[in-house]
Image 1: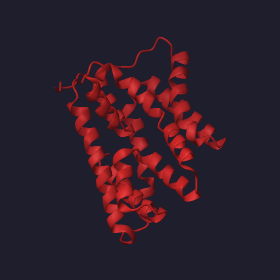
Image 2: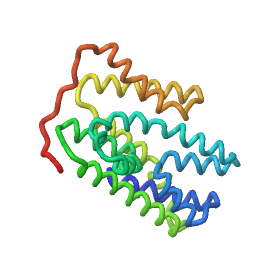
Image 3: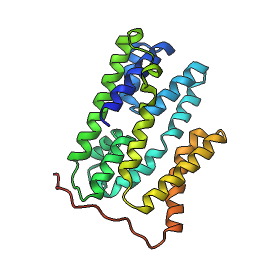
Image 4: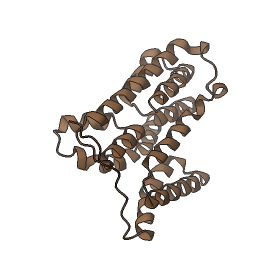
Length: 222
C-alpha cells in the first residue's frame, strides 16, 4: 500500500504541469493539501475555468470524510496536546486511517505505528509529485500502464483490511451501494461523506446486539 502514493503522485505532477501550474505551485499543492483525490479534482476545476471559491468549496466538501475518520481515531489521540493532534490530523489520509484503526482494533497503543505509516505516505506522495513534475513527457500515459487504477486498488485494499465480521461486510456493502447510487444521480462530490455516515447507521439498525469480533492482541508500541 505504501507504494501507491508514489505511483499516483507521479501522474498528479504531470497533470498539474499540463494544467499550467509551475513546479513550485505543484509541489506546494501537495505539501499544503496532501489530499490526493481532492488535488486531482482541483486540477479538473482549474482546467474548466472554475473560480477559486468553487475550487476551495469543492475541495472542502470532498474532504469532509476526514471528520468521520478523525472522530473514529479521537479516543486514541484525544488526550494528546493540541499541536500533536493538529500534526496527526494533517497526516490523516484514507490509507493512514485504515492502517491505524486496524492497529488499534487489534490492541495496539501509542502513536509510533500510525505516525510512521502516515509520515511515509506524505514523503512518498510528495516525492512522486516531484518526479512527475521533473519527468513530464518522459513518463508514459498513466492509463497505458494502469496507474489510473492505483487509487481504486488502494481503496479496495482498505476495505478488505477493515473487515473483521458480518457487521463490517454489511457496512461495506451499504456504503458501496449508497455511493454508487449518489454518483449515478450526479452527486459524486457528496457520495463518500453521505455513504460513510449512512452505512454504520444501517448496520446498527439491522445488526443490533451484535458486537464486532475482536482480533488477537497486538504488541504494544510506545
